[in-house]
Image (cartoon, rainbow, N blue to C red; front, side, top):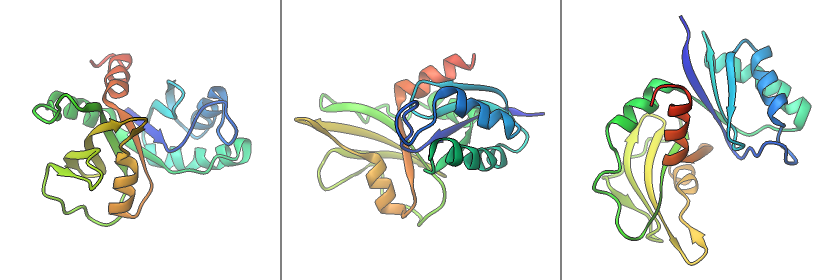
Length: 180
C-alpha cells in the first residue's frame, strides 16, 4: 500500500523562468507513476502517493529538465515524518523576541553534521535546534533586510544541496493532506 510522500524541490518557483508551471510539474510526477499528485503553494512542494517515491521523482526529473530546463535537487520525505516532527514541538524553548522564522531544511547524504545542539552560526542569525536524518530544524533571525539562511548553513556543513520550508508551510501541508 502506498503512503503519502512529499517532494521538496530546491529553488523552484512555479511558472518562472527555469521552473515548470504547476500543470507540467504535476503531469511529470503523474506520468512517472505518482497518484494523488497535488502541488502545494508555488515553491516546489508536492504531495503525492507512490510505491517507489524516490524512483518517481527521479523519473519525473528528466521530464522537468526537458520541458522547463529545471534540474535542481529534489528531496523526498514521508508525510508521517513531518507529522511526527510537528507533534514533537521541536521549536519549543528555542525562540525569542528576535525569532523571524522557524524552518525545516531537507537534504540527502553528505558529510555527517556533528554539532552540539542548539548550534548558532557565526552571524548569529541561524540556530540549528534539531537534527534528524536528512532534516535540520532551525530558528532564524533577520537583521535589517537580511534573514539567516539555514539552507546555506546545511549546504556548507554537509556539502550537498538542501532546500528549506517554513514551519507554517509544513503545518499547512499536513493540514491540506487531512492529517493535521
